Image 1 (cartoon, rainbow, N blue to C red):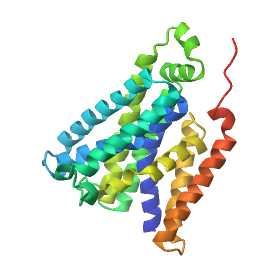
Image 2: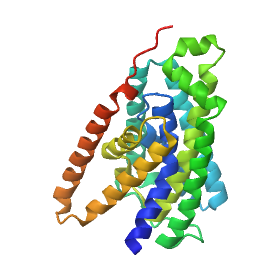
Image 3: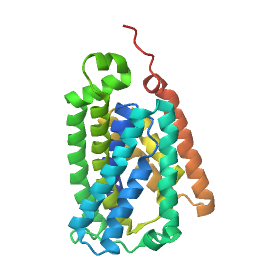
Length: 285
């Protein structure tokens, strides 16, 4: 039964982050591969303030909001200034730069050792507590992103993704829409970063490596880019599969590569299946 609550807790904690990422990569079709960099900066900021500077949760979360707003604005401005493929490369480069800072600023981040023994909210102590609270949070973010998807803002983001110059002719300003999209995505990421790191009681650089990014992209692609229910369902199925693989009778040295290969094949199949959605032909007007 503990495994069920554990799996439910993990699913519910990560759904807000995937929904936020789906807004950028799926709805907006912005080739943003710096998602884990935002999660990393947020998580480290909150728990460094909490664990090393003893600011308390309120100030730590406020610091996390400032950090995530700054990094999200950085990515938004880069997306506005660069072409789509150039921004995809640059977002990876920014992620690697942020990763290098975390890995080498050992006096603050403890480098490759990570920060163990993270404090939890007083009302979140067991997997059952996390599962129930996470379920409420996941339902709220599902409702929020559902409303955003069907709002005027959601239609503007979709219009820019489909036919930018036509959207501009209708008075849709790309700068305003992109900045708001990245900030909203960052708010979703803050929730996932804070809850998930508390649950695992450690934040470590290995939590933000390339395989994690592959899994993020796979969730968005498999769930149909831009679909809130699709991304939610993909999160449930793929996280359940990921957790169930723990029971495969293989050594960790073998299981890690096998899991990465399996998820790579799933991502390849999802891209092939969704190729018409991912790479739509531009409409002629």
